[in-house]
Length: 222
Image 1 (tube, rainbow, N blue to C red):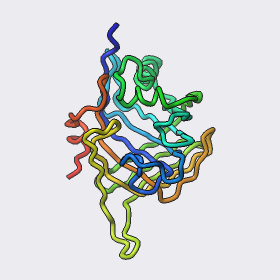
Image 2: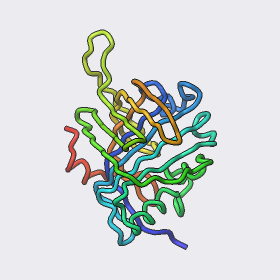
Image 3: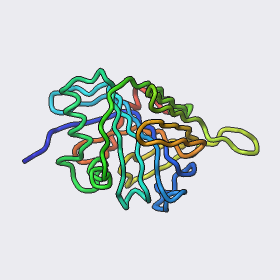
């Protein structure tokens, strides 16, 4: 039986406990042996069958005891409390990885996440500027995170770092940043000047796509 037809295009940011640059993206072990942090994205243009997903914000905190490909992960999704029941059903269908090919982003998470914590529905603030490499994510009483440009430790000038991953499964290209994030929810962490990436993303039932025209038009990099 064929799955639902859906697409998501938007703005993405991640924070993790690895050093800036994230060795995991280069197939190396995580800096501290484990991986914890948060991911967030805002849908600029999205749909699932006939349900519009435009404007939806999704945050998730996570913890993996070793490199994420070893599994055993914990994940807690956080969505805005303004989401409708139809949108909720659509988003959780997408996040579940159901009907998606092996090796695609949400299918991978469905395998490596051992415990899915109960979702939280609350207010989410999402500010994102890829040109300036600045973000701010705030979930009241749960999570506060921000990204800022990496700076040269000698001259204090901004340092630009771009990750290009032709075979990536989350994004194909991202701007590196210094991340600061603190969670006081079920999955707790306090990250200071660690890895962060900002990226345009386009996902569909068959995984990561290259067509980013809508987001690049609305939020151009150059």
